[in-house]
Image 1 (spheres, helix red, strand yellow):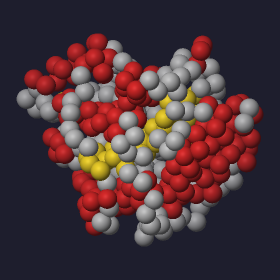
Image 2: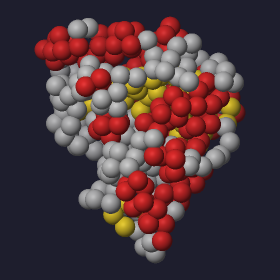
Image 3: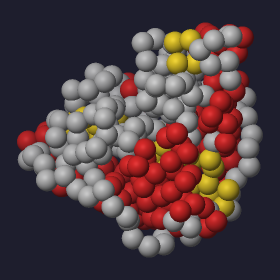
Length: 341
């Protein structure tokens, strides 16, 4: 396998001491890729900056104007209660998306089989009109629109296994039948969205699938949902490209959530998605980082993504698994009935 890779080298220009979303998260991924001798096996793509027109395919002019004004800041500022911004943050975000575009180009043009984007700031909480949840702009949503506009990719599936619901991504495509959005996430938890009955509207009705799992949900439940809901939904949709919001904060050791998922289960989910891409869209799948606030988990998780995409070796889980795994039969049946799966 040829795996296109992008690592945001300007990550250090968007970091705030004491905040859980900091540059060390991406450094942990890079360090583990080096330690496992995976970095040299990846095809690193070049740097570029997304244009304002690219961002406008998802975000409002008012939101982008606000971000542009932050470039004149002299000290860090907050956009809401949890999302910081520095004078350099908006430029880093534009370059992060440009790196994702380069991966999409490689995969769409056949120069790479699949892709891995180590990105920050993360993106899946950023709505068309607001920054929130540590996210300034929505990387994966803008990437989906780029693929559709520049590579004539008609149908994009977005799968989000971050512990928090990808509310911004959902909002961007809620009335759009050309993008299937599937999110598995803890509920209740920030941002308080992603309920079962949020299924899309208008032309997009049925193209949003939410799997809100209760606290303490573990490996067996998560992998069952991917076997019984996610993969069948992908097969029915028949995407031309699969994009994945890969957050590792559902791990049992993450400090910001309460699920019991292990690196082993993340690896199984990754393999299921890669196999689905091979069967449905010529293997075209791109994973990009979202949340994950235990640095060791973040490093191993990123390295496991690379290992699976390259098709080399077994998933590594030196941290181990949790022994908590409550039953999820009732929720599984509800999702199945709601989406006719």
